[in-house]
Image (tube, rainbow, N blue to C red):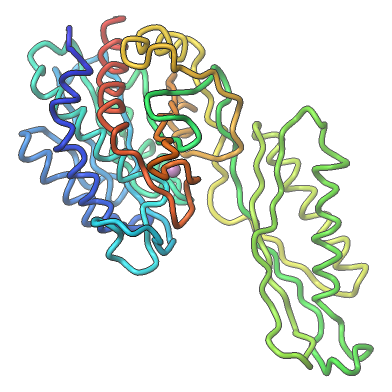
Length: 392
Ligand code: NI
């Protein structure tokens, strides 16, 4: 199958951008992507493309081709973040406190672009292409749910690819690496319980605030003193809540944060030590502690070396020399649930342009995407699936 990836993607650029803007206006967070899911299904109906819904609650699994193996999959995540958008755009978020600040609106639009191109060439596809529109990437493990509900089966997916917009790479470039690309990500929640009382008579209380401050200081040495300096790991305390009066020692304090490691072993070791340190310091201060690790721990995202090598060689037609060999990143991605069971590759798509202000980090209220990158992402999607099928 031969497709002129770039010019076909360029031809539908406006269509892709308009879908992206439509989704951007109505951001929906994990497992509540009802409108987004509906919009995807409407577009698939217009294109006369078969799909399965519901899958993983709000997910949509579209399919083009023979329905037989070989089968490759392309994935886009659909969810937004609980962030108030600060950009002044015509199509800015209309929902208070929610924003597509991680570019998943772009991901959905680019994947629909790929659907549109493949549908045109359906006769020529020797095998099947699955399009995974998944919910809840941001902490809800939507990828795992898609997998558990059979997204990679019948026909069995033998390669899986995903894109993520990347503000630190310039528009017109891509980056990734062989092997572990993104970290395992887990969360923790701690409650420290002391004994509340009058702040003027601290000796009648057990102060959870001083205990918490000691704990947070002690946690720092898990990474700085106990972890091999050549083994990347992160432990960040990201919130501390408790107390609300000048003259009252509170009964309890809650804090929490995230642990990152490039291996599951590393993740589990830091979890274990965090629990031990929290409980040890609490006991020495007469407090009690409750430590929870809520939700799923995302595994590291590991790229298949051959997949990345192949992408580097054929995507020169689109990106020329602007293909970057990246270092691992401590961000997490639930694309990892696909690459756990199937070879694949996760690619960073450059959207950075200083003049347009699109170099602001994801998860920031001022995050913006350079829409000139979207047709490149569409072309890359089409190219990755085509080339992977051509190998069989
Ligand atoms: Ni994201």
